[in-house]
Length: 252
Image 1 (cartoon, rainbow, N blue to C red):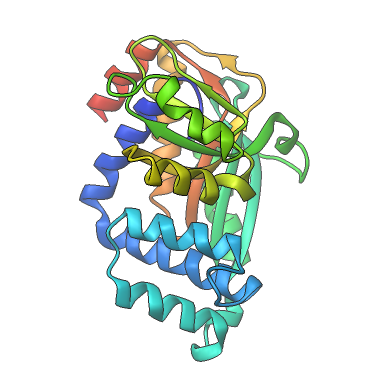
Image 2: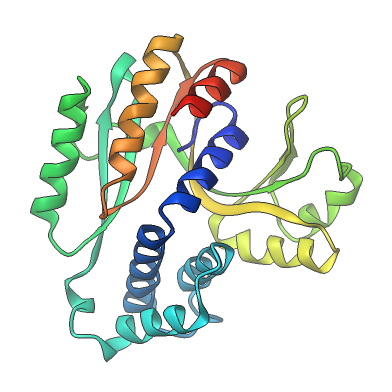
């Protein structure tokens, strides 16, 4: 999920990861398989695969699992050809824009599941292009805001990062083009900077303010969508007070 207080969202995701690690590994393996299928099994020559593999490693997926997923994508598995990436666009409570990324072997099933989840939450599935213009696809690296200064992170700019910023009391967010994320992360690793999280995400261009009740409904909808085996990530453009978001996430 992407919106106000991204770090709060990340902490919420980490809780989900801990409780649903088996499901997470399945989703990560499918993402690796699709990346290998679309761009080949050479990590050095396939940036999408490199990102998918790094994400799997960050989640502590065993090396054997990753290697099997790559092999499946390059032809060792008969079911690789049936997997495809899908991007659904829709609206949630409060008119909030939603981008829903999925990896599926049955687009009709996944589309119906996404439509049902949105409808149940008084949302709606939109037409292609109806929501995507509200977002920019970017790489985002999160670094401890208390442990490191801006000067410590200038190596990221040298490596191609677009921006380094943080809100009071929040970690640093280093923003890159998706294709530069791997190089910027490597530069930070080499400088001894500990990375809390790194991923390619859809960053909203404009945020829609919502109240606490609407935010609670949105979080329930996002959790329901992300609980679907085919859904890889959900991005939203809502804005709510950081303390309210933390409280709602702690209660979920």
